[in-house]
Image (cartoon, rainbow, N blue to C red):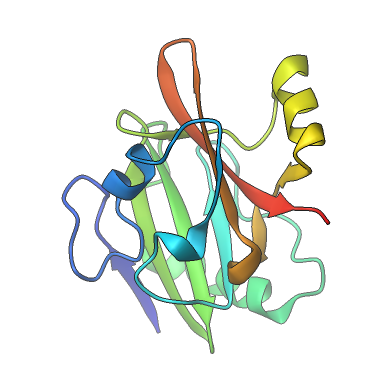
Length: 153
């Protein structure tokens, strides 16, 4: 089953995470994705503009399921959108977000931001176990961003 919920502009009861939850996160703090989501999932992946796909499945069958079912979601792969894709028991669901409301950055951080991530043991990832998924919200050049990753212990 493949389901697409909302575009992030108008939260719906079916949305797993709405953009208001992301926008209202305190900046420069780590927050577990599970704390702001409506449901628990097995895996979450990020699909960013220009990424060309989810990336390496690292041998995880759940990520392979996401890779196989993502084309069926007919997501808008454009400069203006990014997506969180969730998987649980073979079901794949996506939340879409407008970059004009809240943007995402997963790589290409400046040295200062990367040093901060190293200090707090935060590592941006494209796919991760849902319960480990952690969000970091920050501002850069007047725009609000999040990064999704894991805290390494």
